[in-house]
Length: 109
DNA sequence: AACTTGACGAGGG
DNA sequence: CCCCTCGCCAAGT
Image (cartoon, rainbow, N blue to C red; front, top):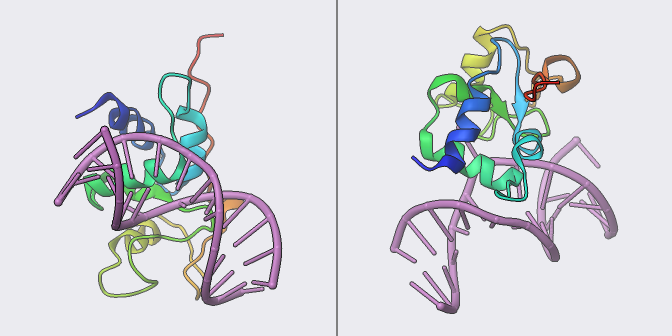
């Protein structure tokens, strides 16, 4: 497991139940001079894991699950999130203003 | 080493 | 609102 991915997983696993983060947001936080993170590479890293675990709380900036089409019998991610209290509209979107989680500062003052 | 792919995102039509 | 294009960068072939 590369350090690159590990950082993504570590951050994603901190997302509390009932909250979500977007790929772009994670990329924004982890991006540094040493390791270039983009929304796409973050999303790609998630794919490498699979759709299980706390990473289900990571969705795209439109408030949608990117794992397959909306409400299909295989979209595990949305089902998981709904079971955590997140509501999706008929087009498969949730209110990011309401569910987006902002991680606490890492650095020590 | 080069080319292609992709669970993304912003902007334009 | 939806659809398309461009930019982005790690991994797989």
